Each structure stands twice: as C-alpha cells, then as structure tokens.
Length: 204
Image 1 (tube, rainbow, N blue to C red):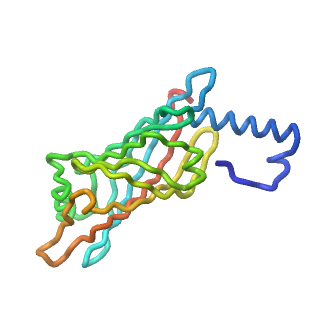
Image 2: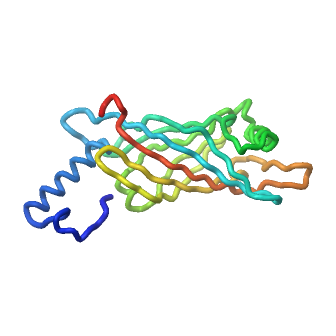
Image 3: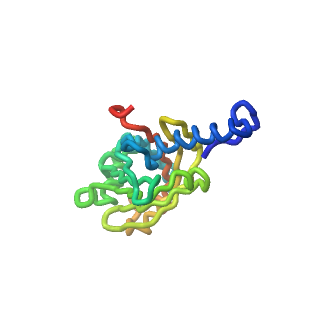
C-alpha cells in the first residue's frame, strides 16, 4: 500500500517510526473509509474506458465516455462497494457501420446498459495482490471477472490505478459481428480502465 524506501528521514526508527506509521494509518483511514470519530468523507470514482478488438482484417480501438459514480462504505469496515454503468450506445470506435453492428450485437434497444458491480473491495488487498474481482453484466448475463491492477498510487486525497481485463463475447451469449461473411470480429475484447478515486469536492 505504501512504497518501501530506505530513506531514514521518511521512515525513522523507534518512537519516530511509530509516529510515522500512525500518520500513515490516519491518512489511509481518511481516504479508504475506515472508522473514524466523524463520518468518513464520501468518495467518488472517475473512470476512462478503452477497449481493443481484433478482426480478420485489422485491430480496432474504442472508448466510452468518462464515467463518474459514488464509492460507498462496504459491509466490512474499510472496504468499498460501487456500481458503474455504461450506455451501450455511448461506445464508439470512430466507424459508424462498425458501431451500429456493435450496438446491434449488444441488443442496445432492449439491454441499453453494461453494468459492473463491486460488492466488497478491500483496497489494501487490491494494492498488494494487484487483482480486483467484480461482477460484469451484459444483457441478461452476469459473469465474474478479475481485473489486473497496475500503477496503483495513493496519497491522503486520492487513489489512482489502471485495471485491465478481457471479455469473451461468447461467455455473455453474444455473437461477434461480421461484414458480408468475410470480416469477422474475434471473441476476446481487451478492456483497459484508468480510475481515480477521490473525496467528493464538497467534503474536501
């Protein structure tokens, strides 16, 4: 959770070390929602989403608009819970025909949202293990997903990290689009999410 260093001024020994550890723990409690005499400040997450697919012709890249959603205290002290949704029709690859085929694959008219649910996030474990488990719902199918976490950075005001995971279209009952039966999209789509978690502006 904290980067190791050999600098004696930053990590002193004895009584000063205990004081430094106490300050570090206090900073973590303020941000991560551990119990405190006053109510913990509300948190919010802002995510940018990118995805990459492969077809028999070439790779393609897409994005979703920036997502902002609340991060709430979980059932266990110091844990988080959150839910993020993406409008299928907001997904874009800078190609109108390809986008229309993608939205049709998702059946956006009947299932307009993709939902990611995070029920019990232990920030300390995520930072240490570099893994983040969640439930991903596409149309009427929900699957467990484990994202790989990189570039975890934390201070008293915010946490930032990158999460990457692959989505199998077939696992969600989706049939990959094709063009004239000649160009086929492969089953696996790589997703990358950059996330920033902060206290809400009104509570800073």
